[in-house]
Length: 484
Image 1: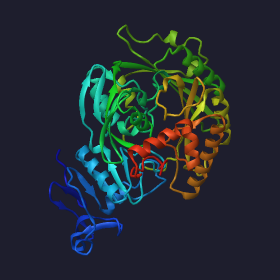
Image 2: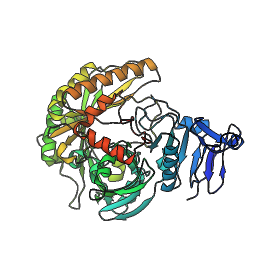
Image 3: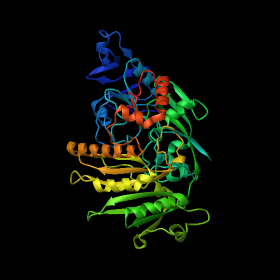
Image 4: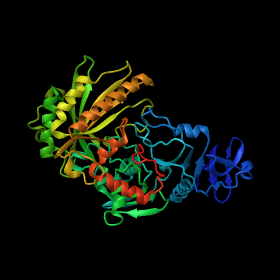
């Protein structure tokens, strides 16, 4: 794989060439806590030589600033260096180097997180998106690098009439990114999360070892990595289940007079599964009220398009407001633009028990407020059947049904506004936890070590054991540094 060098990039295939402050960088000194130039080498004999790389290690200010932020635009933590690997071997070498020199390491894909989950101050950030190859597509599975976007993966599988069983609404994220937290979307109510459809992983542990794992091989590692937030190992390759894909879909936009009516119909649709995808929305209206919308999707089949009358029978939506459109499956799945706006996104994602969802949403509608004229929000509800979630670290309530509750918020760069939103997010988190709910760990939330221990509950000790075994020196700083 060829890699184009950029100013401030370290690329080495036997000879290393990079400049920091005008000096050729040759290594790192743990004692001095910084990079060592050729001019300094004679006076720092104990420094560690940088390993040879197929890709590039970036030390320049501009690159480190660019990677010291994420989609949330709230936390800004500049890394010590950014690795753009040219191979999985690069990741192994850099992790070993980091372990030797007591440097923390974090992996990231497209950084679609809201509170610095893929950042680490004064550590090495590994941009996994440079490893994005599709290795093979079979009738029931696909083998891919973790850095590939779901967008590109889906485009390739659809050429063979196939798709993953679960897609997120925004498919600009990487495979490794969503597998590290769960991966949910409009297909979740039938098929669980993306982590439930992983057949095998190749990962690199905190000791720099490349290991394969699956339900039958190194199962403890497999279960610690899926929805494990990068705490134990970095995913470099995944084998994912595939299913037949529809050529087209029929999209039903249904509007309701109130929250209770909409949630009653959502409950009915979860029972009879007449649609292939469902999600619900509460959106603020210009007159200060809320609008309630259910998006339902039915796949076209070889027998023909869906039967509208049968699908809508017994529902209590407002018929005059109903909008029905046909789209290709690709058009529907890629409906969210890849390039999202760059502004603060202090989102809160909770997993709420089904028995409490209507009252919980009602309370949120009554208490949420704009803290500035350009502080905007809407609420997304993704229904789920908890029996479909099979990975232990993806935490869900002890009920048959649950909802992913997401306040999608778009706010100004105002510290006072963001502080108030973070406080409100924490209030919702505490209220949901008291109900037996959990959170989805891409959220803009301040969490303590005790919060994380309660989150993982009976699996906390198992996660700690996996950390001790596969990252004994705590090199990996994934997620919000749960075990750091």
